[in-house]
Length: 187
Image (tube, rainbow, N blue to C red; front, top):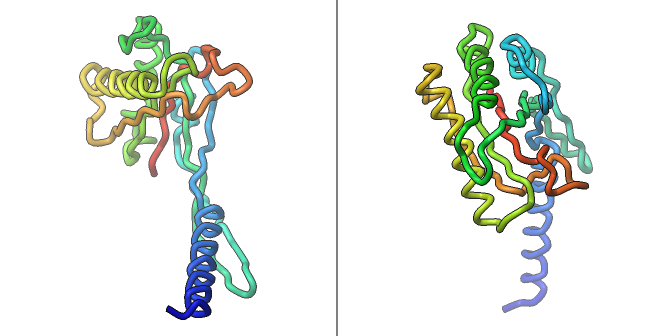
């Protein structure tokens, strides 16, 4: 095998990977999150937090004469500190009251065309696998309540458990602020 050709191929491959990586970085999804920690949230506040922006700013990228652009607006999200029983995915009455307002918002005309991701998060206590499982169960518990009690169509809701991978309060990894559910508008 010709060493010069191998180096040339690897260099070209590296350049392609670099371009793809930079394009993904520029066009990466981001969330415009409204934090509703320790707050009683109304239907209208949820609608304001989750309603997609009408104007999308195009992302632009220049690299040695190569231009790329794309319309990637930040997805709207609401972060909630829902109360669960300790070491459980059972919703407390306080959590259900918050979800009642969320369900009203999701059923409103303002959000009727949107689909949502329900993300479960934990604090840093416990093992990675345990926290991942618990966060998934909590997200599913929220979805089940929205679907079965509030009649939000199941097809509009997806769930994801993120465990302790995205701590809200990184300076205090065991803080209750990290134990939350985030609702993301996927539109």
